[in-house]
Image 1 (tube, one colour):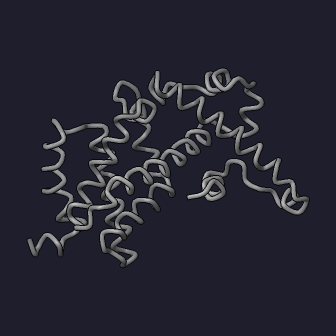
Image 2 (cartoon, rainbow, N blue to C red; image 1 turned 45 degrees about the horizontal axis):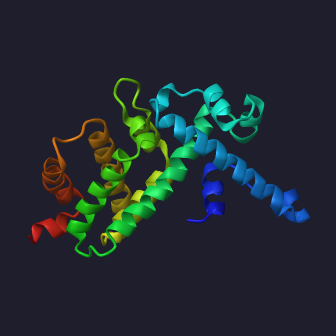
Image 3 (tube, rainbow, N blue to C red; image 1 turned 90 degrees about the vertical axis):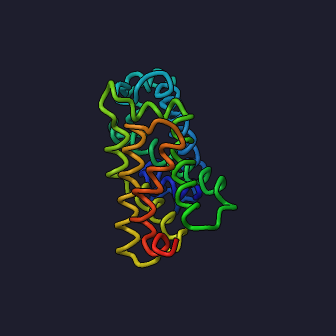
Length: 213
């Protein structure tokens, strides 16, 4: 997923028509770089305190800019949080698909893909803070509302062999909810979570496959 696609999906640094007509691509690039630096600074804060507790003034200070400058790129905290979640979602999806590239069996691909995603989030302090339980676990709410996470999860379901749009959408919603549940309320260990996925997820997402086992 390229940067232009990321910007189009998050609304950050989008190209304006007059800039395109004027050929002012450098201005658009500067906007992208500045927005990324702000998101990087936000990520550093998320790694040290729970995401729900991080305010715009703290992000502006960490990024080395004024609040007025920060609001030029992100109109409010929700917009900044959404941009951060979408950027990280693309990164996590690439990591997950790379890690399970050699797994061809749909059942194993489903389980390994979910376990890999859980592990990748948990190993990132900046992302794990979105699911902390001492503050409002805003990661789950963001995931439920995100069209980017919806699209990426649907792409994963399609990779398992499902192609009917209504089936893909239904099963993708189930996967997102299972993932959020496990991030907020993890299993005892990897083996426990694997058993839960085998028992409660595989039969829903791959019912015909399970029936032949």
